[in-house]
Amino acid sequence: MAGSSNKTINLKLKVWKQKSAEDKGQFMDFDAKNVSTDMSFLEMLDVMNEDLIKQGKDPVEFDHDCREGICGTCSLVINGKAHGPDLATTTCQLHMRRFKDGETVHIEPFRAKAFPIVKDLVVDRSSMERIQQAGGYISVNTGNAQDANCLPISKESSDLAFAAAACIGCGACVASCKNASASLFVSAKIAHLGHLPQGQAERSKRALDMVAQMDAEGFGSCTNTGACEAACPKEISVENIARMYRDYLGASLKSRD
Image 1 (cartoon, rainbow, N blue to C red):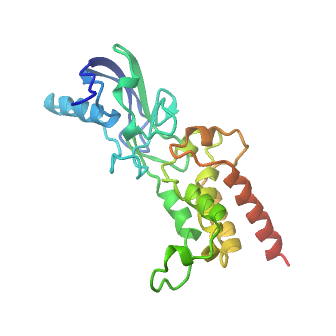
Image 2 (spheres, rainbow, N blue to C red):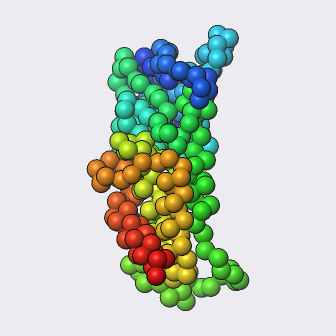
Image 3 (cartoon, helix red, strand yellow):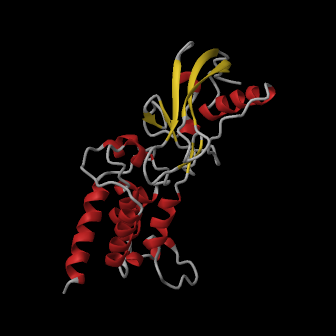
């Protein structure tokens, strides 16, 4: 392969093993031998699991899907950082060249009250889906698609909407926040539609319903530390959080009239 380093490394892995949400769980030691530095982090886990299966041992459960950095499924905390050491990078796009031969790597699931552990590194993030269902939509007849140049949307608004829509709902913002707040995720979903003319009719109701669902799911409050933006693989801006609470406050006051 052109540009391949063809280098292999050996790693000591401390992986969180937990049979279920009710189980106590603990870190367990594993060896990852002859790992190509061209592998992705998930490929390394695949090789580790193949070795465990050959030995008749229970493999480590972890979530994955697209392996292209767009689905948000590969949610791991690696050496204390959501998705690992690289900025704006999902776990599946993290490569083993970022680690040194003989290094010890700690791997654990995203931790939050609203993310109960299913098994090992797999957590239930359906709470985020319920937030999306609470208001992340518009109720209009779609009809035929218009020509893009005919849509009455300014360049600034469309850019802001696209930037917010880049959120993949991985939950890194929750895992990195000391309060386990989902405000960055929720605000991105609200802002995505709130910047578009199609989303204006339900803008107030959307803010009220999605924030209420976020609170009902047990996520913590935002205290503006900025850890969520730093951990976000899609670099969603915390400015969306300010917009969300502005919409929420306005809608709350309006509902009392």
